[in-house]
Length: 381
Image 1 (cartoon, rainbow, N blue to C red):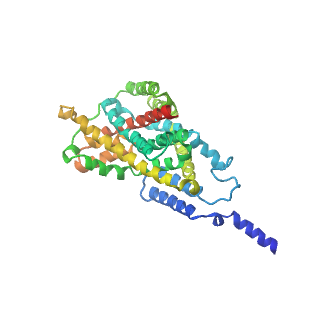
Image 2: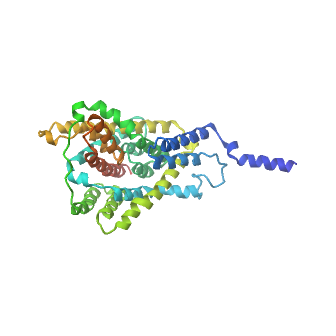
Image 3: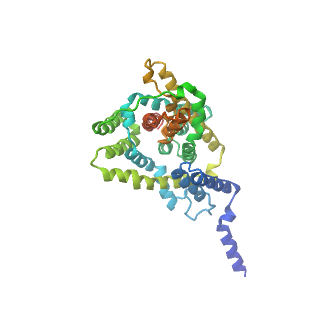
């Protein structure tokens, strides 16, 4: 009988009930909230559902030594997590993004690339704020990249500069990407006048196939020479776009923008979520990172909109004016921020469609965030 009781006690010690803490339960609740937002609200479900379930996986209380936890060397989750920790997954995501992105709007209106550049001030603004809050330069650089509204870039840079903060940074970046419509719209309305919101922009010109093929080659060479440290992200982004536009690698492009990016998205979401174990994630540092992430989005959106307003002061021909509502699209949340421009524009004038124009700074923001990551990595890495 004593042997049976001892066996039951030993079994109990290995269960999650015996090892659970309120922190574990809180993180599991957060995981459920993420899943709910993804399914019910349809806020970035391809991101929030895997991350939410990953948070639950990572916070099932596990008896140490079982070799199943994400942070235990050799466990299955630990091996899958190496794609995040070593920065393998983000370039593959960029390959898929390149293969599904149409740069025509940017090619036809190259001046709008400046909006994408202006929105990157969110990255450097958050970097300075993080330094002021006591983070080291490497940690501040990793936190600042959240302002690029680009989860893969945030993971790539934080894995190089501040791997100990990777979980909090990644979850913060993806969370705010899902909240882009909620964060950006009030800022856009606050910073623009009713007259500015109804500015009509010229329809982008038709771009030839030759231009579409030349762009990723020239674009990659130009940006890679400026920031060689951004090579993994920029190279895969432009290579994926070349596969799409060349016309002779259709199967490769479909694989990159379909099965490949889907598999990597599942793995990156699940393992990033699982990395938020309660004993690692719940801290004052994580709260600061989430606050700085929000501020970086606010700064990026504000700078994008204000840049357009200032730029318009130097444009004499009214027909060439830029609607400042597309300023928010300079962040690289593709195509969500461009859709916000379209939605807010239609509310001001139901016949004024801004989506195609907004896509130019939006895709410029993708390039800009990768360049900004390369700059930070070059200076801090």
